[in-house]
Length: 96
Image (cartoon, rainbow, N blue to C red):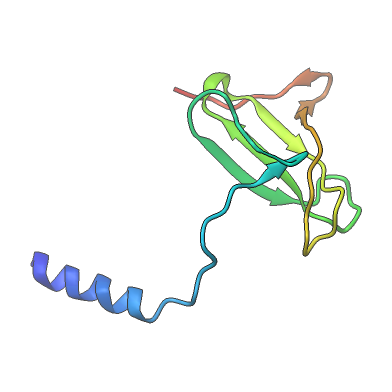
């Protein structure tokens, strides 16, 4: 059974589209560092300006950072972040 699964996985990899090589996302010219744990990124146009912004959830304390895209949608650039706010409080997600 393990051999069949390996062959199926190999066949799926062979037909997968070309993917871009991994790269570091920069904020003001420096790699984004979430300080604690693993990052969980999401691109979405939060402010409705037609350019996808970057939301990064961090494992420590479940905080959510929003990096506003000051570049273009095809060539995004980020310069600082603000924590995601819901109502009047900083939002967070369960973590740990």
